[in-house]
Image (cartoon, rainbow, N blue to C red; front, side, top):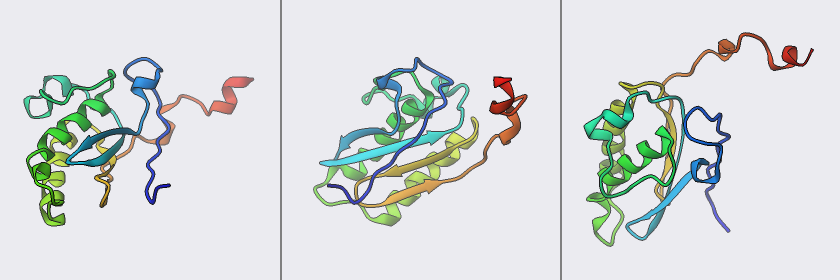
Length: 139
């Protein structure tokens, strides 16, 4: 049983349609499960030094999972002790992370460290990025 679940329906823009690229992503850090889901596109993330994970590697090929691994690496020092870091410290780190993502593209994400849930809403593509409504393509 859980008191928190994160779910996300992915529109595959990077990486194969495969389980390894499915969100939400989850990893253990500091004896807790951390979960992350991202909506948006982060072109050029693989070339950003501050967002290139070194120790925590993505299992799949999505920009979203790369962002999550970069976040986990930043969080490692905070979660190195047996006690959860303060909410203020976690929030400050996540604010800086969100600012780095926003420079690349839409940075809408939900993140949980098993204790708190963080949601960041940046921007969305207009819903009419499709040339026609899906129902129209069936005729």
